[in-house]
Image 1 (cartoon, rainbow, N blue to C red):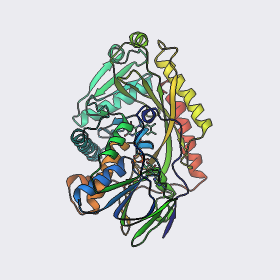
Image 2 (cartoon, protein in one colour):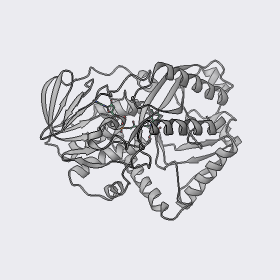
Image 3 (cartoon, rainbow, N blue to C red):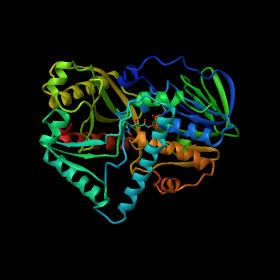
Image 4 (cartoon, rainbow, N blue to C red):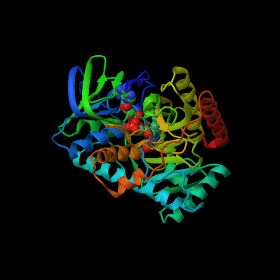
Length: 442
Ligand SMILES: Cc1cc2nc3c(=O)[nH]c(=O)nc-3n(C[C@H](O)[C@H](O)[C@H](O)COP(=O)(O)OP(=O)(O)OC[C@H]3O[C@@H](n4cnc5c(N)ncnc54)[C@H](O)[C@@H]3O)c2cc1C
């Protein structure tokens, strides 16, 4: 079976998380002929975790981890840096049976945080790891209703949270934009590109990392063969960790079940001391919107502010310059609404990145062809979901059993999407409608 990778990772704008880091050491691309016991395709969060875990469990085996770009350049280094333990959509209070689904999800997310914390501490990864939880912010009545429903879900699960009124939100964020809020303690905030780069730099010795090596062609067989512009890699077994780019693989049953959706981030220049005084509030915090289509905001201890909003359906898995320009305008508007006391602060960076979602939140986790394992489709929560999916796929492939693996295996499989052009029409109109409904929360 032959798979062509016609959709390859593109530039998608300058990412502030990546570009504010020092230059990485030179990459090692795949050149000539190479062999390995395992190949992991894609060095995002899932691929980094899968390769590490395989190497931990099989220290004598050769593991190749291959990426089209540098580690941290893709979506794994482009996200807002929330390692989230709680699902956004808690259903425990609204229908029977949902409690176990929510708890399973939380156990998986927390399993990721525990695994990652240990690596970050043991390997001394400098990624601004902060165990300070996250804020949820609401502005309008519908946002407040969403917040109330989320709080009910937390109570039903006996999860701790702290309600915040407008004054308390202002004390933390410096702005009186939010009329209500809530703080949950379990989320971890990170600098995502620094985390990925640190993970890539501290892989076990039996992992060979190939960067700047777009795989153009894959032959599934015994062994599998991956072709790049300058090299060829043969491996007995393969883990797919290419997330949204796997949506092009119809022969593996992934096309038509998972889909690439883009979201976008912008980072301001550092605020001056005078601007920081004008803003007030705490030195660093992270806020997610109570309306899922609203705006995520982080204030960083280096004085910059990061904004994320807008979702678009991009089957080409790339973001055009025009799109990035439009998003930048939207980010500036969202920033001005929240921070009128910072009138001259511009966005220094704007970028996009690919999420991979399925209509029912399901995952194609497992062995999808003999010797081919899937760790794709994190449904937007890649920092935790990607990490735990990568770790557990390695354990699953090697027959290591655990409660967490059972939790993962109980996740539903992705259901089929309607065919194009219905799919595109449906996704685009739903996103536009929800964004319009988000109103001022955007
Ligand atoms: C702006 C933004 C904000 C976000 N905020 C958050 C957040 O706060 N918290 C959170 O949990 N998630 C967030 N996400 C989502 C998160 O980034 C993704 O879910 C996560 O990156 C998925 O990890 P992954 O390893 O599965 O896939 P990816 O990170 O997409 O990694 C896939 C890798 O495969 C490589 N690849 C693809 N095709 C090929 C090929 N042919 N050859 C070689 N390599 C290939 C790519 O280069 C890429 O590095 C956000 C995303 C964006 C864009």
